[in-house]
Length: 139
Image (cartoon, rainbow, N blue to C red; front, side):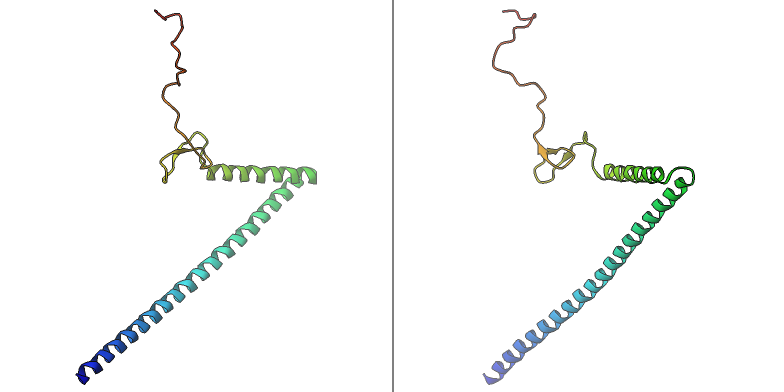
């Protein structure tokens, strides 16, 4: 009987040790994945900042190029208008068109372009309960 009690203690100790090893392995793997994701996020942030400065330099070059033949204020105004048009075009490309109805996955209802749900339109106009009194009415 003493021998079986000793084995039971060893089994519990072995299970605890295996659980500890598994926890440490998972923890180490998650740390490594987090480290890689942080590095990737930092690289994306750096590329975004570089793209922002490149866009600013391009806008400056456009303004300076226009300033050779126009007054400075006109060149700056044209550059601002070009940038506003690009921003508007990018915004319009990011949003669905107003006439386009999207099905909402949660409710199956249609939405306007901004994701606000609205009920479907009836196929026939609603009736008021009165009989028609048009020229073709044969009472």
